[in-house]
Amino acid sequence: MDTKWEKILPEEIEKRSMEIISEELDERGIFLRKEHAPVIMRAIHATADFDYAENLYFSEDVVTYAISLIKKGVCIVTDTKMAWSGINKRALERFGGAALNFIGDSDVAELAKEHSTTRSAAAVDKAAKLGRPLIFAIGNAPTALLRICELYREGRLKPALVIGMPVGFVNVAQAKELILQTDLPCIVARGRKGGSNVCAAVCNALIYMAEKELL
Image 1 (tube, rainbow, N blue to C red):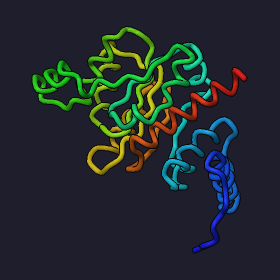
Image 2 (image 1 turned 60 degrees about the vertical axis):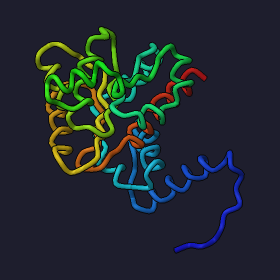
Image 3 (image 1 turned 120 degrees about the vertical axis):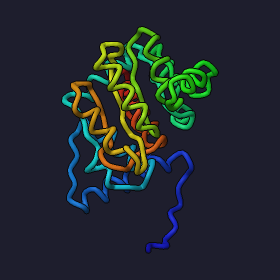
Image 4 (image 1 turned 90 degrees about the vertical axis):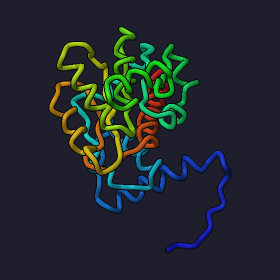
């Protein structure tokens, strides 16, 4: 392991991190599509896991589409407080959007108990009633992805975009594949890997790309 210490200012750490990621991708012979690169690199930055260069699935033209949604003031609904906390809400709000999370709401808890389901699934039902374009950013709960699919097939919900990043072993990979079987615009981490931190990183990558276009 290289023990050489880099002297670098705090405000330059992220830039240097991205340089290292780019260098290591080159060393591995991995070449990213230009429109996907900022998203993949932020996922790697959040995890130090280069598998995201291979397992992130992007539906056709989804990055361009996602940026257009953000610029129109779309709301992002997360399944966890951690994902919500990680999203740059100030940057999102400049476009008129907002990050929302319903997992701690009392009516969501009651709905989950009534239907013997998870709060994450019940929170999807609450979000469906908002009646506006939504990005669903799911970093933990496969049951949230399953509920999104169920409501979509029933015609009760049409997400503008699904970011599917649950992590774990039980029904995780299967729930992601269910999203891929729909025609919904999506960015999905196939397999077991993911997490709320990755979910927030993907959201932030899209927000920063939207900001860059404005500049």
